[in-house]
Image (cartoon, rainbow, N blue to C red):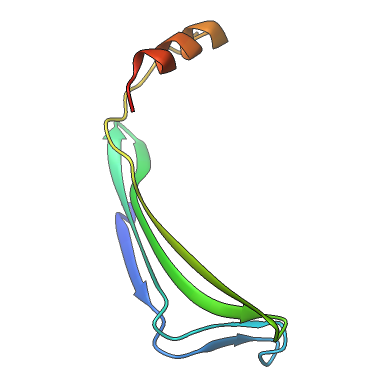
Length: 93
């Protein structure tokens, strides 16, 4: 049994150290999706993060990330560094 995904939303402000150390604002959210890419191998395929908050009463921060990963392929166990570099050069991103 595996956790395949999670979707979370902050419903109200979360404070750390009574708000002196920091806080995460309401409306912040994140979601993660994981898939089995081969027998027994699970990888994160989607990640979405939107967080607003502040640290030490003065420094505000915002973090937005949206990434997805796909087309996982298993490589040989005895892959050398030179072979790995050649393999990476052969892909177009």
